Length: 80
Image 1: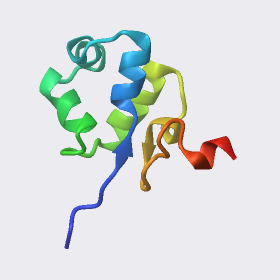
Image 2 (image 1 turned 135 degrees about the vertical axis):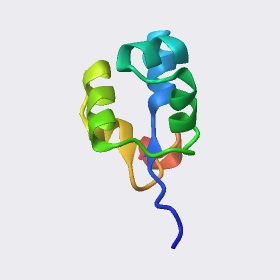
Image 3 (image 1 turned 90 degrees about the vertical axis):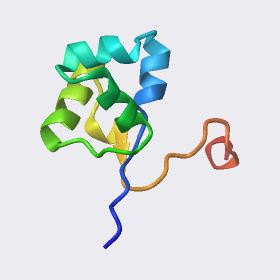
């Protein structure tokens, strides 16, 4: 059975706030490589970690994580 893909916006949120992977990892209590694995979709977070990430950024889980790809910024579907 194929692994279920969870899409995320962690890298985008980090970039917007000027936060490094290491800074985010320290705030979450995980290894900095874990943040990289999450961003690349190589690792799906536990529910607990997903909730901690959303709390850290001050947004709902749905803003960060999705089972379908997020639309690209500036795509035609957003300008309609």
